[in-house]
Image 1 (cartoon, rainbow, N blue to C red):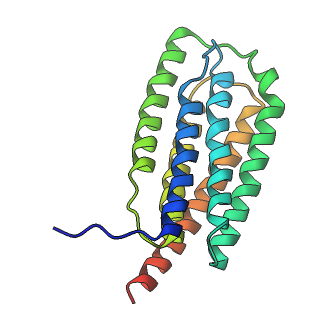
Image 2 (cartoon, helix red, strand yellow):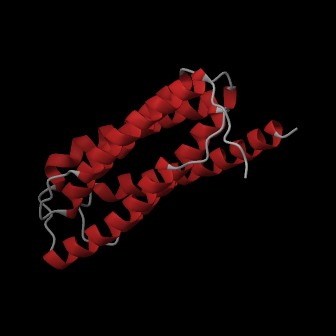
Length: 193
């Protein structure tokens, strides 16, 4: 049986803020007043997810001195802020597109499955004293969940203005996941040198 690692005060402070951000994201994504519009529901549900990406990245920027991690965090802040702005701009128009009870049920079943897996993985990431590694592990799972959520909503009849935003969001997050996985591999290799 391995002894649990002793975390530094800096790591503890970083993780405490991460937990606060995660709790707020989970609450924001879970307690949404649902309507008959999948488009409207999705926008209300994904906004806390995108805000959490910004907050998680701001959190790592307080601690990291790793330039590739800094650059990635700044990119995530910029792209997530753009997505939030685009979604907020169309929110009032997209609620007009209504869906059947069956579609709403199918959407929410998949939504719950995706979010529960994402929340669980984000709540229990492997933790180390390397804040950069912690951030990348957390953000990879966050983005993977975001991609699955966007892919889920594209299966239904949704607001036409939402479609290009979703496609861009999926592409951006997939590109960032690739970058994060490469960076994580390099950091883990260095940690064991």
